[in-house]
Length: 386
Image 1 (cartoon, rainbow, N blue to C red):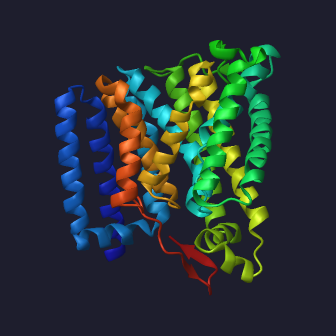
Image 2: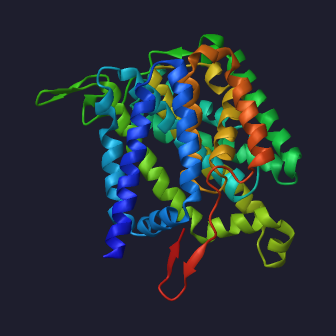
């Protein structure tokens, strides 16, 4: 009985989060948005102080099937609250795409302890690969996606090689240099479109149905934007499954050992070099997929989409959400996409906002909003907990 009560608490908590989320997105007044954010922040702080409620929520979350199914359903119905303002669905889709990218970046920053400022550049490489193939050679979205994965992984390997003998801020400087070199090369090459970029990138087709079209089911018209939202949800779901499997595998533990003390890891027989390279390659694959989804969603790609501000944004998402916490980094992605979008009046100060968030989090809460959890393994049953 107590177990069912805890599960019910978790489901009600999910519904409450969804309601708060929808109300925030529907508010248009700048002042009301500020007041709402302050109220939610205070309410969250007071809730975290209630140890009994938090204990029930944690206990309820252990029954993953009972909690995960309502969460998936709530995620799927969100677009239908914004049928009259489809732009909100557009922004939500962008947040989901960036969530895929930060899942890959978390392999390096969170799991292996290597700060990579080139994830946005790798997104751009994946986007340009698919865009060039689809617009110049007429290949399908799916072929372009596979090519982008291969090209992004290759450049991830190229990026990882110079970092093998560097640590801390030296490693970060190498990734920053890579980001600027990639940006300038694409900007100055004529076959990439140069500063004009690439326009007319087609939407993907699924069994011959293009996501540029709307779908009518009964009396409800589902626009192409909502259909693309669901496509990204599928990719994000696959990304979450892969990220969780990697996190709880021997590979995730090896990355953590290298992050905590690479010399001690070597004493235990771990060779850091191949595992560091693997973190860059796998993270680059996630970036490439996110870049392809972004390019085909927006229909246009240019070097502005891979500027250093995007790299800084992605790093800020990981640090804000919580390094080495899969769900935390995704929440960081949503916060840093949605909140600035709600305050477009301060568009010119967006980069300043990201920098302030990064500095404040590093000073006052370096573990992020949702810190990584201690690994708990049930050796007898071969199961893990989080």
